[in-house]
Length: 333
Image (cartoon, rainbow, N blue to C red):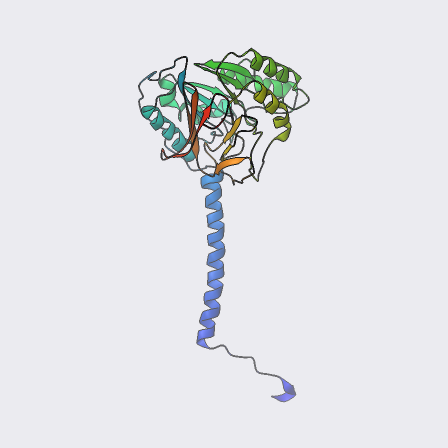
């Protein structure tokens, strides 16, 4: 051609189809990636889909409590009012029908997406109505969504409202139940390792020393041991509580905050469990202290008979996906 110019290359039909197809694949793949990411977030990470609350009518006070035998449940981080919370609540109701229990240890975060005072019916009364109607006692280790770490007159009044909602006069307490003393701790305000923690730490040491119960279970929101890539272990809390738990024979510690399940090998004779998958799910990890971790909606059922405690983790289908037996010395039996 004149001036050395080259005629633009013409694409044949096969090449055009290939180019258009590749472009469409990229577009469709991109939208699929965004859709799957949005689905994961809405369905599991935040639990925005509505659900159906359990409607079963349970036999009231069907459980037995003796000096050496008892069954209790544990759950945490439930407060969405969505499908996942309702599914876990239904599984808890189903478990009651098979193995009645009269006590639930809740590890905190009862309400997301708004005030617990405003959302109380949808995050508490509706999902747990069959259990509440049957007379099951719920006790809560208040979480960061119930309490605040800052200190001010407004925050103190806000906390007082939440305590009144549960009928508590303090944010930490001992709750005896059969052969167990439950030690409900406040790791939100004040953090047990924070500037305002002296009173609670002194109380815990004395309460543990005074306890004559054969079984001791601590319940708190923030986890001394967690392999979650999002939050992980609160080592400042661990440094405070672990020596006290080991010295005074605490066998089991129930925690939440991370939205997953993780059980440790006994640490100084104490097994720590994160049971924070009561409505939301987050990524899991493992550490040298991890016996099992799982990204699965779940609650726990714990049975004491004589000198053995059987700890089970149960998913929404009623499947026991983790089980361990602990002796009174805290060892895996």
